[in-house]
Length: 328
Image (cartoon, rainbow, N blue to C red; front, side, top):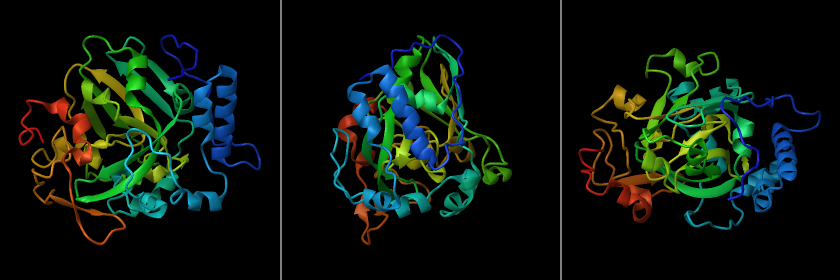
């Protein structure tokens, strides 16, 4: 995988890219131009083709994006992709409200540029970096993943981003690093749902280090060839396709490598319902929802849920010897 040759030393804050795009250009076009410039200067080679595949520039192209044929990668599912309309209007993102359509209606208040991410803890290269610099470190990839919510509905979503393992390795974890902790922005002015006490804000999620280093673990900055919509977790979110959706934390502002297992938001709110692992498991029901079947958005009949959401061959070995009923 090609990388920019620029080496970052210690604490660094790169120049910020703001919402102030040149006249006549959308923010996406501005982002694309900035990225292309960076890629050209750095000589990314093979990564350049990946970078130039984003994003579509016209409404017609965006509407056609969902139905176009895709070149599937080694981690992709060939199942039909959920409509872009459904993916962006049927969301759980309690920072913007409890209803499924609340995020799409309320997330316009979120400002995703500038966006600073703090990286700290058990790493040899702690730093604070803006989102555009962070994503320029890696050639972007497309991944078509199944997404399974603990509420027993599901989608197939075409993400764009980079492997979480690439980021972790770049940070150089120390020997004490056992878990990766992620934290969402806390700002009730931008996230009106945080004015309620429904959860203990900010939203926190975590993975074991070996889970974070698995090739399927992904950091998304785009959806369906377009910049990630606010309601889907812009500008940076986690995508772990073998786990229930609430593990896929959105709008990340801090990544910490730690030695002790972090206390995560849903596990604190309802420990009998939401475990730390949250692996999709049709044999272990949630107290309020059977996990044996699921409702794929856009389909009429229910379908059987697969162990680890259909990724068992790839990830089951991570949990060898672990009682998945107790460690749900």
